[in-house]
Length: 184
Image (tube, rainbow, N blue to C red; front, side):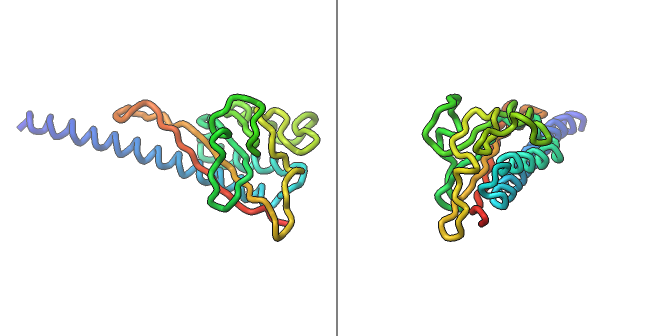
């Protein structure tokens, strides 16, 4: 009887640990989705205002901080999309260069976490981009917020989830995005 109990309890504990890790990774994904949507919504409302990116990133940061996921962010990208279901330009997801041709603004996780809580001297450049960004190729003043021809703004968030029980690995990269049309 004890042998059967030992075998079954190991199996049940393994299932419980896997379920816990899966649930926590799912929760991190939901936090990433909420953060991307918040950023896209705020950025859409701010459109081409000079402080649009700062407001967008502040909303994204707030959503991630309230869910405890801010420390897990590895990259945030603000990009121009061609449609509401537009993909993030591949180069914007992976480049470490500060000069690329795609229309996106890239912040590393460290740059994103180091952002001040209020706009101060040196926070924004003259076109409204975050001065500390790795790449600044689509600043707010370059965006088109005119009703019939308005641009689509996308926000892509990448974060890492570290498994607690390491049954299926040590970490998982979670990527979420949201796209909205600029409001006039």
